[in-house]
Image (cartoon, rainbow, N blue to C red; front, top):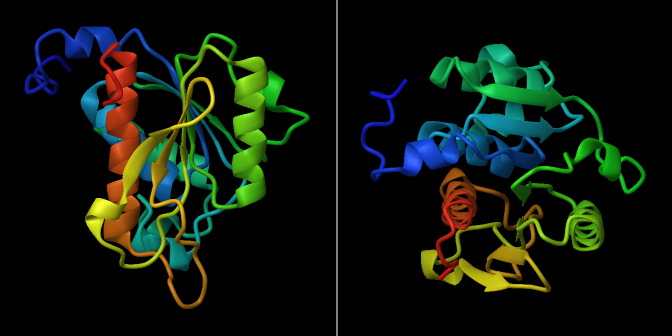
Length: 204
């Protein structure tokens, strides 16, 4: 697999191979974040999601028509292993809650990605991370719906080790919708920020 990552900057592949990440959600954000991390050289991923692949997911999520009806984490694991068969992926088909976070988020994880759709779930994970994994960077998302300008998507620093990607205002509804290009822009910024933090580079 060294040839596969030969375009990485010197030393990056070796450094990332030692890191582990936790991805909460395997939808538009989570599936795309995982794809980018694996293509960059991350080899240890825990991903959690309770949902199944639906036809409406296919406009922005890393799944295929023949995977409709499959649990997202099962389909995602299948797809990621096609990229890197050496990947160590713990795919958990379960809903992450305030009650099970401590058991399901690895204590030794290097980075947490918040990739949920619902505001309540986002707040729950951020609160957990700040309380029980305060030393671990957590990259959350707020505002990615619609066709807003690219430059509206920014990275802001929250409390402690919390980082927030998005425009901070656009919520998905029947008027705004979600479109692949904007979801992928936000997930790419999540993934790239995560890589910088894992490599001990400044967030900005």
